[in-house]
Amino acid sequence: MTKEEIKTSLLDIISEIVPDEDVNNLEGEGAIREQIDLDSMDFLDIIMELRKRYKVEIPEDDYPKLASMNSSVEYLEPLLANK
Amino acid sequence: MVYDAVIIGGGLSGLAAGVRLAHFGRNVCLLEKQPRLGGLNSYYTLKGRQIDVGLHAITNYVPRHIKTTPLPKILRQLRIPYNDLELFPQTISCIRFLDKEINFTNDFNFLLQEIADKFPKQIDQFVKLSKSLSGYEGYSPSKEFISSRKILHSFLSDPLLIEMILCPTMFYGSSWENDVDFPQFSILFRSLFCEGLACPRGGMRKVISLLKEKYLHCGGELKTNCQVQKLITSDNQVTQILLNNGEIIKAQKYISSIGLPETKTLCSDLPLPKKLLDQKEEARPGNLSFIELILILDTPPVNYGLKHTITFYNDTEHFLYQRPQELVDLKSGVICCPSNYQIDNPSTKEGMVRLTHLANYHLWKKLTREEYQQQKEFCLKRSQEKTLKRYSNLEKAIKAQDIFTPLTIEKFTGRINGAIYGSPLKAKDGRTNIKNLFICGTDQGFLGIIGTMLSGITIANQHILY
Ligand SMILES: Cc1cc2nc3c(=O)[nH]c(=O)nc-3n(C[C@H](O)[C@H](O)[C@H](O)COP(=O)(O)OP(=O)(O)OC[C@H]3O[C@@H](n4cnc5c(N)ncnc54)[C@H](O)[C@@H]3O)c2cc1C
Image (tube, rainbow over all chains, first blue to last red; front, side, top):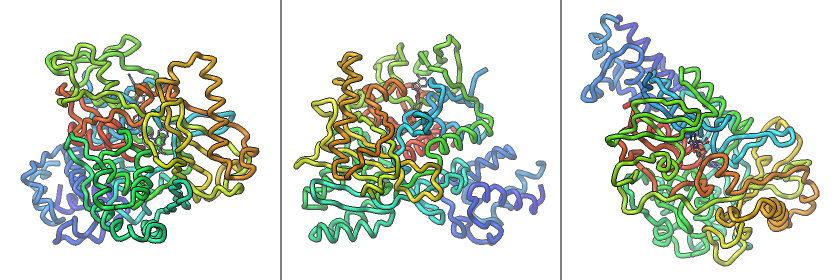
């Protein structure tokens, strides 16, 4: 997947979890959880949706790398390179 | 085939757990002994009318823009859009003790004003109490019982106010007599007073069909008319389960929503120490049961002066929330008028009133068949006389009626003693002494429609998904 595709997929996942939020205005920098109402259960759901859709396992120690949109895309790019 | 998970019981907690597991691709099978889903809060038809077994209120109601409380969290976890529930908020409810009345709405400030007016000396302390509750986690892994009564006494000095605040939280979710476990109290206080009450269009049929469709859509397997007869264990693991039709089912993990003592009776060959939980006292069946009366009126009850959505009442000097010495305790109870939710375009011109009272399972159980029928009739009549006498002509408006006793509850849900709120001791972390057997729903510790759904979600997350 390209960076752009990863970003689109992430936005798709987030909007499935919080359908009432407008995810298109999410800034690339800045924590996702500060921009929209996501609690810790929602955050874990993002990780699980990634696992369900792309079979990527994200170890708990790496969760902080998924804080912002940009850092998530950076982190996921090598993992999703062949998907 | 070996399932990833089998869920025993298709009540609200089992369904919610099932939706989570199926959504994340787990190979899951849900087993329900009844032909219909919903358990303690299912539905039926009474002379052509669609009736809910229990529904007084969906608690934890908040408007759509609020995201941080249990109801929206649950809906997000289940991927059910808020608007699909079509919730209609309550109008006004009250707690009435003899001639003292505290009204409350879905606006917490309204309740504060009521307390300020009616218990002026207590209001400052009441505000302090509610502030401390709003910061309290609610979930406590501690297995010890914490008395809410004691904590309320440390804030408030007027015993009447303490009783009046405890009363709704006991009726709507205490498995203990004359008290509430404090974590449970804090959840109930918020869900009834700080958040609020509502009713979905279509009642429980709506809620259950949303869950069922979601579950099936995600690929969950459902077996109704399918009773689990035995959990076969070996080496502290459930190896397989036996169904009443002789079928055997195997899974990696098992989640039971049917109650702790009820689950225990299915584990006939439990290994030593023959307990499901590591507690001094083994989980015993609860003592508290209720009767529920359903009255259909020719027009809504507000036409007879009954304007409250829910009324919690007590007509004695000392309110007792305990198993009564007689079949039914009519001195206190809950009056619910589903017609008094702010429903636009209601589907019927008829009205409905539901009456709930504490009841004694063992005394009902002793009756002969004939006495049982007579006592049902007698209770219907006496409860109406007692609770409805203040609303003139209301009794004449009754077109149809029905009654559930503790025996009805036990018969349909398998809850021992008809104990709606289950065992006083809860499996708070969902674990049992059997490694791959988990408890969700009522006996995990979260109660009511919203509470048990949250329980199912949490147990599925913690023990299977995360
Ligand atoms: C009259 C009444 C009014 C109520 N009103 C309200 C209200 O207004 N608001 C509110 O929030 N809550 C209310 N409640 C409480 C609420 O309904 C319950 O707390 C909740 O539904 C419990 O869900 P559960 O999943 O824990 O258990 P259950 O609903 O008991 O689910 C367990 C399921 O397991 C099935 N089962 C049992 N044994 C077996 C077996 N061996 N094999 C297979 N299946 C089995 C049962 O048939 C049942 O479907 C009310 C309850 C009653 C009875």
